[in-house]
Amino acid sequence: MKPFIVICDGMDKAAFAHLCSLDQFEVAQKAKHTAEEIEALLPRANALVIRSATKVTADTLEKAPHLKYVIRAGEGTDNIDKVACEQKGVKVSNTPGANNNSAAEHAIALMMTVLRKTAWAHQSMAEGRWDKSLYTGNELLGKEVGIVGFGRIGQILAKRISGFEPKVHFYDPFVAQETFPDYCKCETLEEIFSTSDILTVHTPLNDHTKGLINSELLSKMKPGAVLINAARGKIVDEDALLKVLSEGKIRGAGFDVFANEPLDENSPLRKCENLVLTPHLGASTEEAQVRVAEMAINQLNEFFHNNNLLNEVKA
Image 1 (spheres, one colour):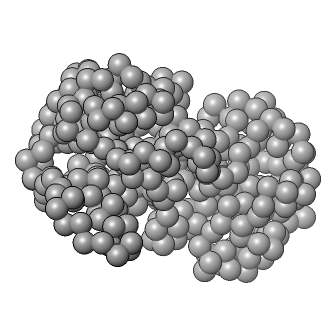
Image 2 (tube, one colour):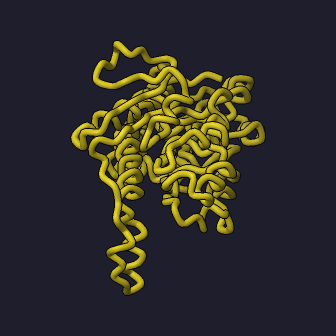
């Protein structure tokens, strides 16, 4: 009997067609399903390929008695109950690296949008105005850029912005200064928050980083500083963020991720005038989606037909 594969949250069109053409799998007919459709497919599913929208919980596993494998088409696996998966014998993988460049470039896009006020200027133009004097921005040249979390994405970002000639600092207790002599390591979070003109977050979400950026750290930022988060929403205390933004304690922020997604239509974040919002677009490039899909298909084939588990993520 062929493994039955459910692609929950979308896949590159050509890659999905390729997966469906493979004789060794039976694939649910659509590349993107509603929550109700996924629930109806769970009793048959042997594998789920998910992005950030679908959550795999203990309840999901109870409804999927034949499930053997969950692939997170991306890097973060905080939407998967890995303890419950382990208890049920369901293996979990991600696709590390496939989204890294896309996420790093999006953080830079947010950074430049806030610095040059392009989102606000565009809205003004769309409304028929010419408010040139209102949108004087700032350059990245010579600024102190702090990167919290200096893994693969943080490192790519540092490399990509080097042409702007900022001074790059990073904070990561697991990365040694001598490994990256071109950048300056900060020994504490307090140091990087108090010295950065632009601070960008690139840590995973786990028990140590949930709520990491709180009112105490935000209060240490420079009055003209900018905060960027294209990592995970729950790393930043959103109430504390709103307070420093509304009080003008920092210049502005750019956020791609939120504690609860989709962001509630009545969220006060939507009304914050010095905050640029995007709907979790970090991995949303055509190039990244091709890489993610190719990795996921290869992982499915290796797992079900070669008894080989690639990129396992444990609880």
